[in-house]
Image (cartoon, rainbow, N blue to C red; front, side, top):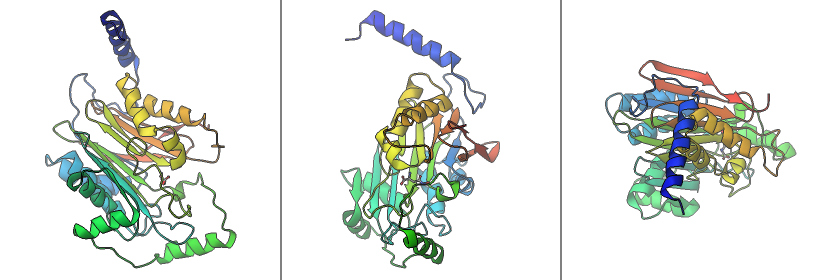
Amino acid sequence: MTTRRNFIRLSAFSAALLSVSKSFGKRNYEPGNAAAPIILSTWKWGLEANEEAWKIISRGGRALDAVEAGVRLTEGDLGNVSVGLGGNPDRDGHVTLDACIMDEKGNCGSVCFVEGIRYPTSLARAVMEKTPHIILVGEGAVQFAKENGFTQENNGLTPRANTAWKKWLKKSKYKPEVNPDSHDTIGMIAIDASGNLSGACTTSGLPFKMHGRVGDSPIIGAGLFVDNEVGAATATGNGEEVIRTCGSHTIVEMMRQGHSPEEACRIAIERISKSPKDIRQLQVGYLAVNKHGEFGAYSLQKGFNYAMNDDKGNRLLDSDFMFK
Ligand code: SD4
């Protein structure tokens, strides 16, 4: 049991950590003050998604609405290889989508392994708002989608995805790659003008995965976690390693202990380095923001970047990384 003296000692320790913690994203941080609006999202596709989200947040809208609108832009873009209906298929030629969303009150919703739904994050939001559950998968999620005004599209693979699949079938060898071109999953986290946080994460998953495989992106605490008192984090890359270490939840807990967002992301990446699997050829990128608007990222490998939008504009930033 924590005695009062221990509690005071722990609080002093946390305060000391807080005062020495460094931040990558310095935005005139003043302790105790809620941050001005900010939107962060993974990879270069995040730039245009951020702009869409900024339209909402800059007019005083809710972070939840902003992240949904932002990632919908990416989901609707059939040129993206890792998000939405234009994404790479699984090894059987099916595009199966995973997405989740979480708001400032701890409400969350998720859909996994859904086919033919253009905006899976909106479906995840419907699960959050209209059901007593958090996760719906596969056929059940599609059934719920149809009952709630979503249409299932059956247009097959895009020509690009079809060519990529046919090429893959020649060897049929599943191998997660470091190559940034195969990682486009969008995780978006935001703070609105009221100081409230929300996040969303959406993907078609790793290319040529087994049929039925679900990654980290729709798993609350793995691909995304939001705690309005502390901050938010999201992940991209090899989902198995993120799930194994509860990546986004770990980052938020590290920030709660006083680590800066970048340090928290680095600690979560270091946990992955203890994986029982060979991770030298894998990529994982983490992105985090704390309640005060400090932000940061860290990845296993070189090449992870993220988009940051605040009142000074929208820009693409490079993450620091472990394997130098
Ligand atoms: C997954 N984390 O399904 C996703 C893949 C990803 O960019 O992030 N790709 O494991």
